[in-house]
Length: 187
Image 1 (cartoon, rainbow, N blue to C red):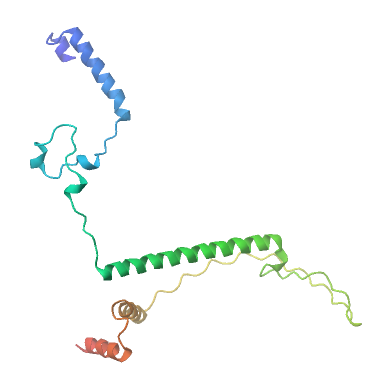
Image 2 (cartoon, rainbow, N blue to C red):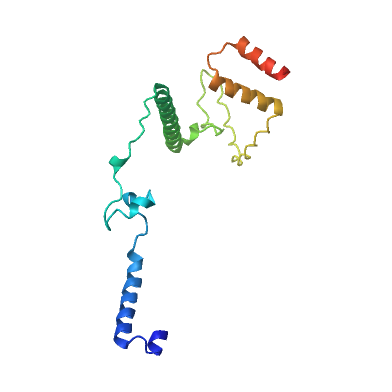
């Protein structure tokens, strides 16, 4: 606007410039500002050698490191099996809970904690019928479970020792491990 007021730019050019700015600002909403994977400049010295719109690098420029170490493959497989076991256990518990919920909805008199007994049964072998028990009052909400107490330092250290032994020395005999721990504590 200052250039128009000082007559440095004519009105027609200013109008075209304003129109271009409006068009650009309306298109900003549709613009994605994420860099494309192959357009990221890895070496600034190579940027001058590439044309506009050309991919700067290809996947073939880099080799992926294949981890063929049998130990790492075995550990990855163990971790995957453990994760699958945890998922299966979770699904089993979820299915059991759903089955139990449906069963108790259909047969509420079998629900644990439901102390209501069925109506008096007919007399057997000449014995008088037992009087029906009065129904139990409605169960009150159970208190929230208490948080477990914090472990003592001895329990904590014992747990740490057990975990480290299980992870780092699974095949070491007990007497050798205990000697090593005793030697470490005395030094």
